[in-house]
Length: 174
Image 1 (cartoon, rainbow, N blue to C red):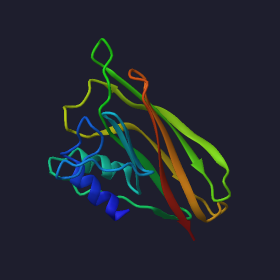
Image 2: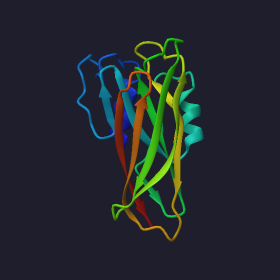
Image 3: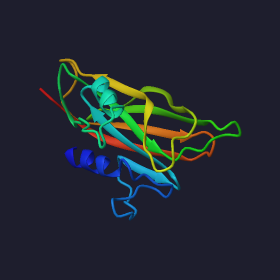
């Protein structure tokens, strides 16, 4: 997950209207946790401390040092956050991006894990990434199985009709 953080920091000032790009302006191929459709792009990240992540994101430090994870112990919790760019405004100048989260257990069982607005407001400035409003937090108690989980987020720009699905993996340990 550290490479994901490094990639995110490198991309922070460089999100463009033609998918994700690297520091030289070259397009980055989609991965399961970072996808794009035209100028609309979404990335899913996990953090053990959503409040701290949001405070760091909103700080004046450029680039911010964001704390992400891909593991959690029984008794702990993680939050899935969405970072995006390129939403389309409606005739009133407002974007309408929504998401739904799904938790897939090690045995393949899928459980709906909430939904909500990623963004309902004016689009961000060109070439900037936006931290989504909604998130999903999941806790694991002693009765939950350990193993490899997936968190799936289905995101839709309701104005343009573009839809993306991103996946991040989570290892739950004792």
